[in-house]
Length: 106
Image (cartoon, rainbow, N blue to C red):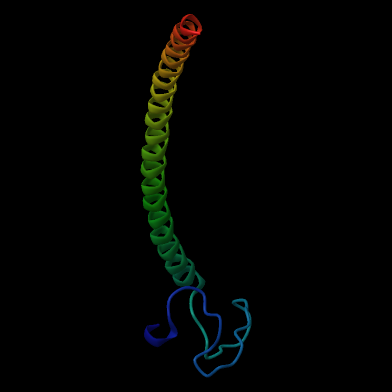
């Protein structure tokens, strides 16, 4: 197998196209047992799936972190809105007081 590579061959080392054949066809120079080829393909897929699972876990952790940050920002926004609303009410009360005072002076 060595220089033929892993998995099911796609091209021959001589550059010729690989043709699937059965046990009844003549021997050919790109011969490789299908069980070996499939086993190698499965090993390679396992690595890719494990990498994908790791990436998925990393993505999930980052997503949870973002969701928590959004919740914190929403809470801060509500607190800020409440503070601003109180300040506006206080300003309105002061404005009324000033109007009353200025009304008395004229």
